[in-house]
Image (cartoon, rainbow, N blue to C red):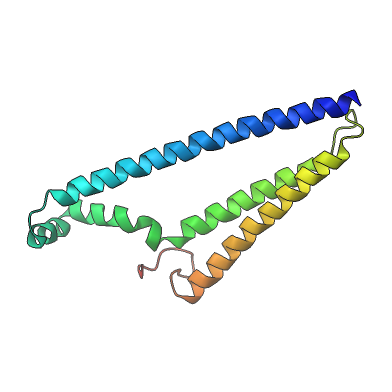
Length: 152
């Protein structure tokens, strides 16, 4: 029974640190997105007319600015690979939960539940990546080698 209490405490500590890490990651990405939006607003506010903005877009700096705005939208391959990568990591971590340590007798059920959850989350991410690939390929957003076709 003492081993079960230890495992419960371990799971609680892991869950707490995971939630803290997730919170910090969300705050960081939110803060970074706000800074990017503020920068884009300042850049766009510098132009008095549409003609000034059009002239800016003709320069190499303007082309880089425009490509940075549309990079995520025009490159579905990056999000597909990211989704599949997260799915594989979760699935492997879940499979690892099915192999409990021999010294922790009686804790197979909590680890099996966590493992099952992680495996199905991983399969969901892999399925999402596969569906995104199929849709992107059908719409012509990907070329045969997986590169951006420029239709974004």
